[in-house]
Length: 325
Picture 1 (tube, rainbow, N blue to C red):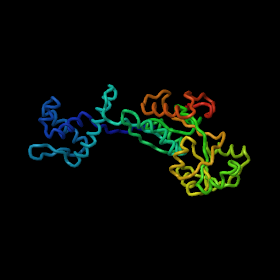
Picture 2 (picture 1 turned 180 degrees about the horizontal axis):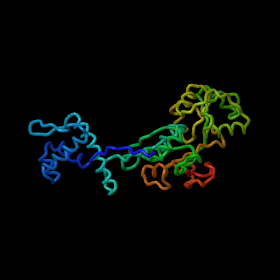
Picture 3 (picture 1 turned 45 degrees about the horizontal axis):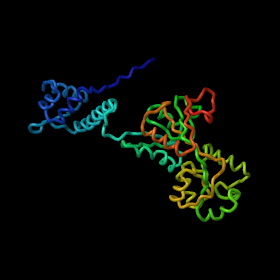
Picture 4 (picture 1 turned 60 degrees about the horizontal axis):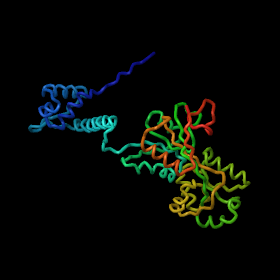
């Protein structure tokens, strides 16, 4: 049986009258600003108080001031009407004076140094940008993207075929993978690399990740079997293990210098044929957000990128196509 759920709706017309009175300090100055009679203002404020079940204004001397509940309502009203003005200014193309907001999800296996490098162009725009980052598994982030809680996702893989929402993967590019180790271990393994990795301690991403599969294929191809001492999902923790001397660890070559400098480790060399690919996933085939445009342009200039953006055909492999539905 169909159920109807009653919802309480706020009358924003009433809220506007209260907001004006609270800022002007009385019914008469609010009436002059709103160009209505003071009795109309009083009636609208009274209607809001009745709908909320709370007294919002009290008289102190010659002024009307908000009660405790009134101050709470006023804070919300300030934000509501401030956003309303910003919406109109944005649609009409006027500068708002507010920082442009970019809500971006970062897949948890993306190295933090890479994520920061990819997002850096957003802070180099003439218009200030506030980045709000969320880290999670790709599937959950796609759900947030579908609900428009995110503007984009930075990922190491295109949208999976299992995604049941329409999203588009825009390739940013690819780079090689370098293996690093703490100085003492690096000195021991430098000669004969990569054969020297046979039996050597190694810290790797968890199974099922794109990088782990690529590393496993490469090691099998050269018949080298390192000793896996840790499998770690979080890229920063993986590097911390490597920094502590627990074992050799991988990281994208594009941040090689930053890894060496930040973690005090040494680069052993690249793993031939092992690559990391990066994508920005959006709900739109063509995005207009200036920060995303800047991020994509810089990444494609710095990485070996393909600028094509394609939507996945039914039954196509996620490896070959970058859209999903």
